[in-house]
Length: 121
Length: 469
Image 1 (tube, rainbow over the protein chains, first blue to last red):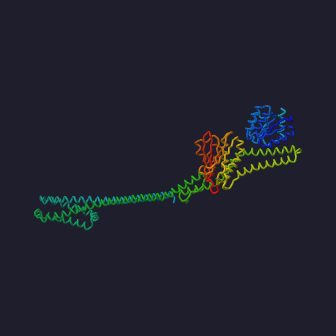
Image 2: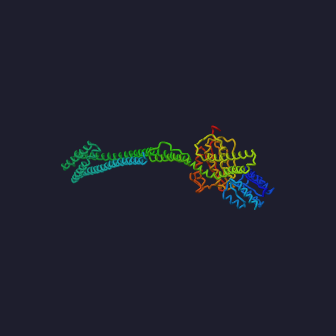
Image 3: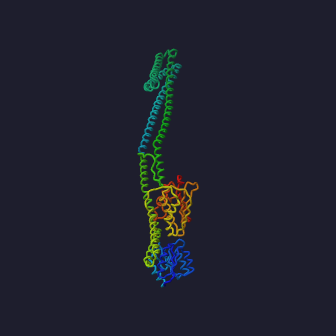
């Protein structure tokens, strides 16, 4: 599924930058956002195969991003990443139909495998 | 002197005084009693002389001889009576007067005997009658004089006793007042000192009882309070430190997130570099390395802030700008606020005068208040931090307001009491009390307003530093 569109939303810009560099090497098209609002706006314009979003962000909560995506475009896969990996947050994300949940620090190899698996479903 | 000894001495003096009054009263009463007994005898004598005179008159009028015998019998009784109370009479009227009385009685007796010896001519002999009458009158006058003299003496003794008892009463009052002053003025002064010290200690100022520690029981209490105050003072630092460590534990939740991000960034850069090393330009490599370095600094800064907060510090007050302290405190907790979903609003007035404070201590208080606020609010809550100058311009106020559940009116007056907590086993009940002590040590005030269901506002008032401002 190389060439698939991936969106990364994280207020830590380096996260987007590195995922983009690594994933684009494998042929994915990656767009990065450091704020949730412009990311959601972009999602309305175009469909993305996978959205990787941080849980805690300044303007909108990652949980809300997940909810919005699953409501408007259920086929889009959502992977949540967080530095604050509490059991409660993980359970809530699962309830909201998150596709996977990664605590920081992230292993890019695992993330890639996960994306690959999700896209081949 | 111990209080128990003082009371004992007061009682001894009291008992001695009462005993003196008792002895005096008994003595006077005995004197009065003796006088009254004597007056009674004198009265009897007087009555007896009066009877004799009447009998004598009857004899000269009617010449009844049996009357003379009666007079003689009464005279003998009187002489016996006079002899038996000789001492009393001598004491009352003096020896010469006593002798005069005896002589008068003897004379009267002689006159009566002469009349008895000359019964035939007695009623006719006017010179003999005259002698009898004269000596009888003398005797009667004399005895009446003794009675009135003795009555007067009794009256004198009673009025003298009244005066003496009144003086005793005055002296008793003076002694009572002096004893009260001597024993209790010092006692009350010490009690006042103890009360003042207890108030100071309850407000976090570990002062000592003023004045010298006396050797009595109160002195022991003063010494115990002083040593307690010293002990509290030395323990205070430990309490502050343990409270800070408790805050630190709560802060860790936020710190985990705070550290997680730069760590993740470093990990991501390293992994990407390893993956793309062959394809990266020199600029990219430099950019990656710089990112790693920056993120390491970020971690270092977080760790340093935490270390600075947790480290025990020597008190160090200096003229400080309040807003910078509020901002530093806020920085320490902003991530925790973020994680807890609490919205924070800062409204710091520009150009505030400086305050003379120990920055670290005040920072601890603010952090503590914010952590407390976070704990009572659910996600979506709002915490407002404000700084402004109080109306009169004497204090700079730091306001920490939350939209939590508020504190009940029942709990509000106890909120700064040591070990008072509404958090159950989670709270030590020391946070606010230590904070209160810190602010009081800065000559400031800490107040609270709360409305159930609306929220709570804490006001920290710090005196303006006039030298600098």
